[in-house]
Image 1 (tube, rainbow, N blue to C red):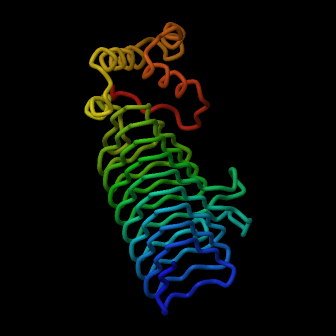
Image 2 (tube, rainbow, N blue to C red; image 1 turned 120 degrees about the vertical axis):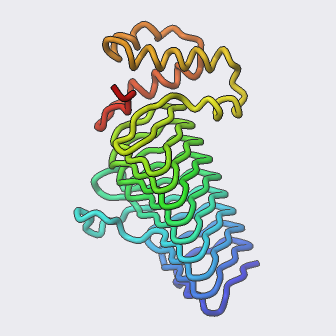
Image 3 (cartoon, helix red, strand yellow; image 1 turned 60 degrees about the horizontal axis):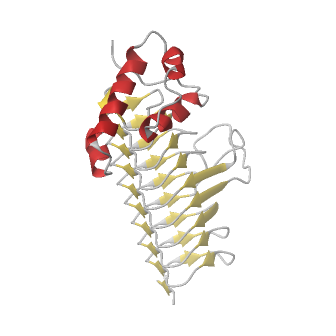
Length: 259
């Protein structure tokens, strides 16, 4: 059963799933697909080629799927794909992809996007991510599972934020942040690893200590490449994830310790 307020404007071609609530003054355009059990609160705007999964919540004044803020965008038929059980708080904005990448912006499952957060074109967001108030992603940013971005932080285009990394509030991130890393400050620097998050994820002390020592060794060694060569036989899963992250191409370089 759908609960659609009589002031909501729903495109004739929009596909709305079961048990969806759409509040007053919402606008849902033609090419939007909305799964089951979503709640769309008053005055939300959803447009574009936007596919939304199940059990998401969109709070008032969200703008979802409007055209990218990219001057190179020329109306290409790009997409926005949103998974399940995400929460988009008031004034959150999300843009679809562009021809300059894979034509898709993709958001996973069970994430929280707080008031005023912005996800730009061609971003890829994993699962259980938290973006605090006014956190902003430039275009083409990848954010892995369980990462946390503090309030009023901003991530430069094409950066990668590793799994369970934490970005401090008011930080400006210009480089890739390693998995489980802590980054902080204007022109953010690496300040350590997310020990609290790792403990909460039930990693044991030895595994965490090995990972911390490896991060220190890599970033304080003669070269990152030379240290990586010495670590390819490790049995520590955290270190393995780090090595995979470091082996990928990066256009922004790594967020490192301040010298």
